[in-house]
Length: 200
Image (cartoon, rainbow, N blue to C red; front, top):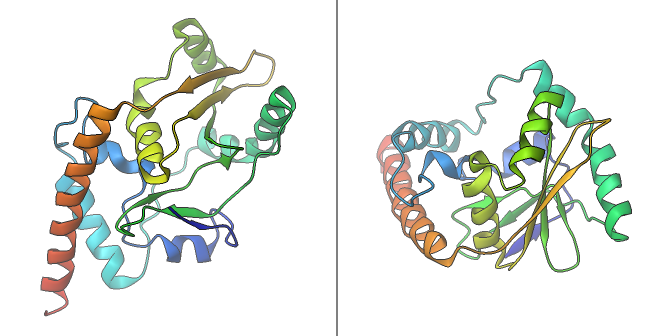
């Protein structure tokens, strides 16, 4: 893995760095939880093609709940550090060795990564009752482990006034193999599209 830790996530430099690069938070647009090609793959490919050519990242709609989640990130990270008695290191972006794709973890710990979600109270109640990694984040968590090679990734959801949910996730090697195959195909086709539209 190639760690870029001198850039702040969400900054103009961060967006520029990951421009046209598939990131783990969008791996669900490339592959389903069953390891099959996603129906969103072509549209995501077009998005990244435009980013690679224009040098501008398409920033999606940000709801009030999403903004709130970003604002509470430092609070939830501090809580996680307190629970485990560790320092959670913030990094900008991590490239896979191939440099074709990467991830932006919320923190790197001693030998594992951390994905945090700051959610609405009703969502936290649901997550606590389910007591497992929400399916919406399966590809992101497994993809982050694929990128980094880590054998542990913690998922934490948090909403003030309610218990935090912390799920320790381990690699699903069969899924990761399928994900890697789909990523290689996706990135190969992406490079062809960029070359074609650039007149290559």
